[in-house]
Image 1: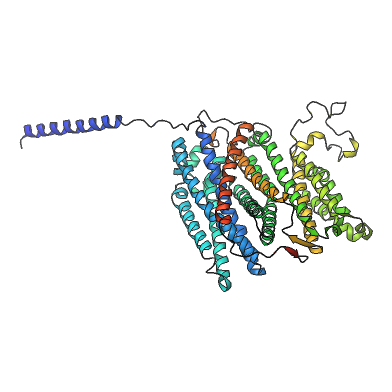
Image 2: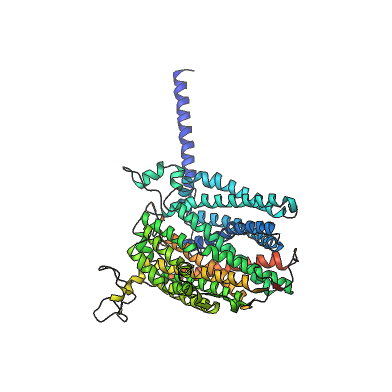
Length: 591
């Protein structure tokens, strides 16, 4: 081939390449630009909020219920009491149904998130690729397999094989807890991304940080603990809801007896975990404030302050309702009028908010001396009763103790809800314009420290109020335990109003979880990932409490309706597999 032929061939090749490139560029240019998705009527953020909160609620029950299910099964095996085994199996039936709803809402959440916030979703997925693409799916598959094995081997693994079945339940809980901890990594990262090392910006550090450094951030472990305790609380109250529905539809004394007992056990588990929940919440808030001091006033005294006022109201109502349920439970105990408690216990309950506010003002938590004051105060009734025997002879009736407890729950909740500047009108202030109590000298602690009306809005008073709620509830349960040991309990004869209390407790727990979930997301302000990935959409604002409350209520009603349907579908339409003991008296000390 001559030189001229070579040049002709090169020209043809060059023209061909140009034409191919040009046609490719034209074809690429003809690909339509993907429009920004806009969810109709409610907007993108509210749509994501709804499906995410529904998914979290279903996941909370699916992860929390197996914990007390396995404990109940173990208690039934240890005590040879078929009621515990039946409780565990019935709650597991509902859990299996709702497990599918967890998967469905999770898939819906991913689709809505990808459609409405594609850039953010891609960015987050790339940073936690191993979690989203490998670890979490494998854990979810493993949990699915173990859950169905646990449910369908219930009859096959009984008797001598019961220990094997309980071990399978323990494995289910281990997988569920690990799953919770893994998915909390990206969740907590959005609120508190790991801080940069010296000489690097936050964006530069995050791009080079390992997966563990991103997961192990300031709020990861506090969020794990808060959600774990919250899930157990949630599961206990849902078990009480199941019992309430079944009690209302029971046709025989035996069924009413069993579901009365089941409702009490579910409430006991829910309240027992609830006692720890305020302190887990404080720990999470403390870590958020430690991460960025500007978050604290934003939560407590600025845009989200009314959210915490509502949280205080709901927590107070939950504690009040749980103590009311104990009161109704005690009314079915024959001989309860003989149960009395030392007047010293009542004195401690009444003085607790003031004494602990004073103590924690002088020795703020976590000063070790704050606990040094707490321990002798709690032990005072026992210590004084032993040292001064005649004091032990002054007792009050159980009715008086519970009435006092109701009053202290209301007072504790009022302190918890006290905002800053609540005497701004000077309606309660002395004539000199100060905010000190009228009896100034009576409340003097040191030359510099006084308890003023405004101090009720500070953390020492809030901590004292939370501890008062917990202490009063524990006293009432001790009183109930003493009553069933000294009297005769009649299961199935509880006041019918108690079932509405159980329904209210479940609804309130769901609603409060939705409220706190909104708060945790809103503390990021106008960021997808706090201080790292800003949200420039028109929806990056803090909604009002009224707007949020309407959507939280709607989400709660949808979840409540689905759970109610699952209960009726799995339990009301099938015959009970284990016959409950006939209603009647139970010997003193029965639980």
